[in-house]
Length: 298
DNA sequence: CTTAGGCCTCGCTT
DNA sequence: AAAGCGAGGCCTA
Image (cartoon, rainbow, N blue to C red):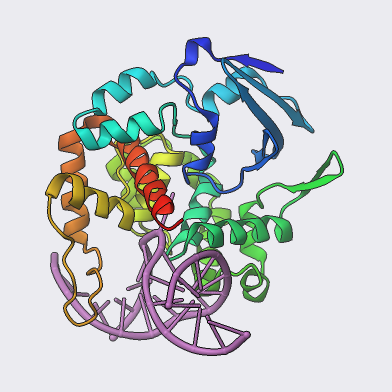
């Protein structure tokens, strides 16, 4: 199947799937492979077309338009957030990166699992979780896995979950899964309120703090103003905008941990500076900063 | 209301 | 090679 991208420019599949917002896509040769909403999708971008095939169900073009937010007027958004040299460079480097509309449940669990970890470890855990608890999809002699349902995770034993390498996050995972499987409409209901109320509700879930709540708001609930502040974003904000060093703990010589007031300050700055699409700015800055770091360490 | 520790586990560096 | 450090934070005291 083919989706013509002409009316959806700019769009860059590699940047979109590589930037760290999703954890379950893998590139095999020239094809990206991933399972979304229970369907295996293989994707390849070729200039102005997105080629895809799926298994076991077919999907229509609207599915991909929705998933990759091709309905966002990205040119317009980029011109709105393009407010300084730093973001300009990030936009130039990864032009066509789009946010993805993720499934709320999978997104929530992924970011609870992600805390205090690096990306390879996060991917490993989520993969282990899907392999252990998710339904199989066998295609082309390869086995893929659907992300497990809330009720399945809720019924898992702590030992089973620990084998997925999630460590002390087991209790967050279990308790959150229980809350959601006990109240199946919870996540659906959360699509209704605006950013502030949504965030407040997400914060009630065990293992969800400001950062996770903002990631889930941005990636799964259409809240494009949400501006998750993690340590990379904090560093780029200090470097580009505050023009000063991050406070150091004199005893350990390490960066002081991010406080709530500092989180709120950086978030407020971002809204003031980038406006209603601050979330897009966050993703471009984050990916640029992390790539830069990866270059340095090579 | 603010601020320190502790925390599973693993990737990466020395 | 083995050990130590720090990671896309959160929770509790």
